[in-house]
Image (tube, rainbow, N blue to C red; front, side, top):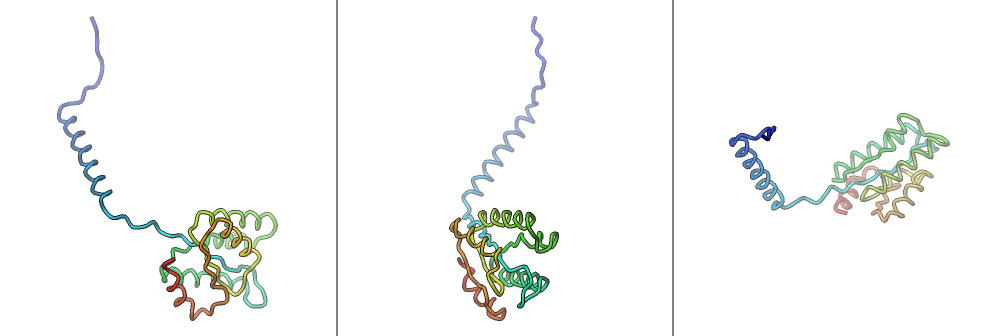
Length: 160
């Protein structure tokens, strides 16, 4: 004599499973038939951080956020991950700075483009720029551009 143990689905459960599979298949077919928007292009924002004879540390941070806002409003999906590191660690020295720059370069590798802003090319921006070039990123140089013209020029580049 054999004993069989198990849970067997009721007929209504089998019907429900079939309906769910059909609904999932229909949804997937409809979704795949729709035109898909191109993926978002992600841009890395570079800006001087350390203070100098033109702008203080705080002025540079404030200006970087202003540039991010202008570029965002012009249609760029802009990130500046270095900003959080600077808020936590300051301008950074030695190993902290080295680690931050390495992180920035890893982020740049994953971005579609690289935008230079601010009043000069800082030493950190130079390292980041070399990383962008090494990874064949589109580079937009807005260094030294007066803020009053930034929105207009950013709109010209926004289709890159």
